[in-house]
Image: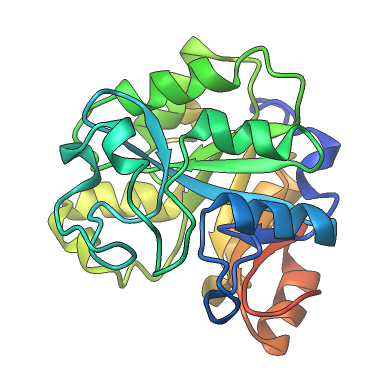
Length: 253
């Protein structure tokens, strides 16, 4: 493992990372919005955001596959065009679903942004290619990551200069894992794909700290570990001891 995976930039773990921006629904600042980005910048935090694909191939800053949790629409994100998605208000506020270009333009390189590319593990690389296209050439600290090692491998091929990471966990209690073959689940939790995916960093679930996978990545693989999602003081203590930086939510570190 040592010396084979490249080096992540120092800015990647230099400051705490606000999960989906520094959002606070009670204060009218929904997740993954321009307001959440501005709040994170004002606090001096890095930002983690998610992207989903629109019907016309744009990268939209939105976490869920479907729109229902945060908007008045019910269908999947990829059922509407970017323009249509941009008219939807988020969580009863005046905030709209931003495109990734608009989101990054608003941040304007003031803090690092880590973009999680969502995947259905179906081999579709349109969102991967569009996200890489948007980020390539930007004079800003932006990294990309995904749960899907095939997607990360694609990033290594089409945009080798962009910092890329793998998101993983040991527990795999999300219902989506039940759709995957046991061999695939083992490959994901054990990072058995590293020779193909070639990530620069690991994003590991805080509830699975400490563990052999993040330990070996840090000590032998020259890979920094960011851990998600830190919400309590106990989790914060785990992050300090066993990771290089935390992705946090619900408080200000």
